[in-house]
Structure formats: structure tokens, C-alpha cells
Image (spheres, rainbow, N blue to C red):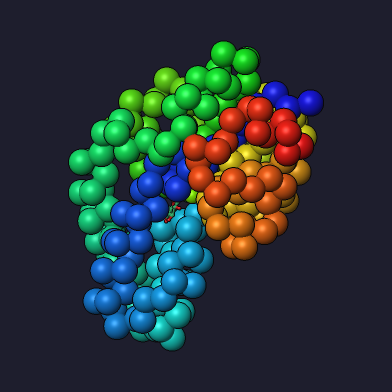
Length: 217
Ligand code: B16
Ligand code: MG
């Protein structure tokens, strides 16, 4: 029986994935790495330093920089990203998400956040959604990023629930894999061909309601 929901943030609650992409695209251009749709999709849900490594690898440049230089590059990307998220308001919440969170709350479901983003709490604050997420996995405590299940296992633990009692909600292929490996039920939001491993697919956030989920289960 499902008792809790573990949410991804970027691309599910709000469209920050666009800002992440813009900031990485800028950095890729600067580094002379060709920006492709495959690279863009592959970066979704991936931690900051792992994302940088993926970009450098795509350009065969992973050995061209010292660790210190890599940290500086990742910081530059993050500064650009933070600039964008500071402009966010509750109008940036994706369609249907606020009513869905209210629906979950009024039906007694527990809610936690499993975002790889160290900027997660700031984003929730800008969206005025902090109160909905009493439990947030701290990505700094993770030994491995998505697609490793660790973040979704912790998201269930914070709610004192078993993984089987939780549904995870994701927009990234790496995230859906993490949910499945954690033994939770996975919802994939977005292109169903990219998210084909999800137990339940919705093309858009607005389609996600308790009724639609119950019907799909
Ligand atoms: P930060 P999610 C992920 O968040 C993003 O999808 C990914 O693009 C980003 O690199 C990662 O967070 C780390 O974010 O640089 O802000 O710590 O989708 O897991 O909510
Ligand atoms: Mg995401």
C-alpha cells in the first residue's frame, strides 16, 4: 500500500531543468564541446560535478583540467544558474503540481524531496513550497548520485516508510532508474520514449492526479 511520495525537483516541481541546460550549454560552448540533445537529456538528474565530467568526456577533454580547475568551472556554471533561480516566483511551479501536493496532503500521504540539487531548498523557498517538504534528502550526504538508488532509499527512510510504500516522481531517465532500483513505484514525467522504464508515464505534470495514478497502478 502506498503511503508516501518522494519527489524529484528540477523538471517535476518546476522547470529549472531549462536553467540548468542554459548554464551548462554556455559552459560547453566556452570549453569547445558540441552541445547535443542527447547530452542535454543525459545531464538531467546528474550531480553538478558528474555533469561537468559528462560534458568534458563528450568533448574528449576529461584529462585537460586539474581537479581545482574543474571545481572552478562547476562553480562558474552554478553562479549562472543561481542568478536565474533568484528571479523565480510561485508562478514558476509547473502546472497541476500545487493542487497535486494539496491532494496528497489532504489524503494523508507523506512527502519528501530527493533532488540531486544543492540549490533545492533555495528553489523551494522561491516557489513558496517549503512547507510541503518537511523532509529533504541532503545531496551532500550521498556517496553516489542518480541512477544509484541511494537518494530514493533515503527519501523513503526520512518518511519512516519502506520503499515499497513509496512512489517516486521523476523527469530524468537516470532518476527513474534510481527509483526502480530503490524498489519504489516510478512515475516518469515527460517523453515516454526517454522514460520507458517508468511504471507509470505522464506526458505533463498537469496529468498527475491521485485518480490517474490509481487507475494506472
Ligand atoms: P546543483 P534534480 C538535478 O536536480 C538536476 O536535474 C541536474 O541538472 C543538476 O545538475 C543537479 O540537480 C545538481 O544541481 O548544481 O544545483 O547542485 O532533477 O535531481 O532535482
Ligand atoms: Mg529532475
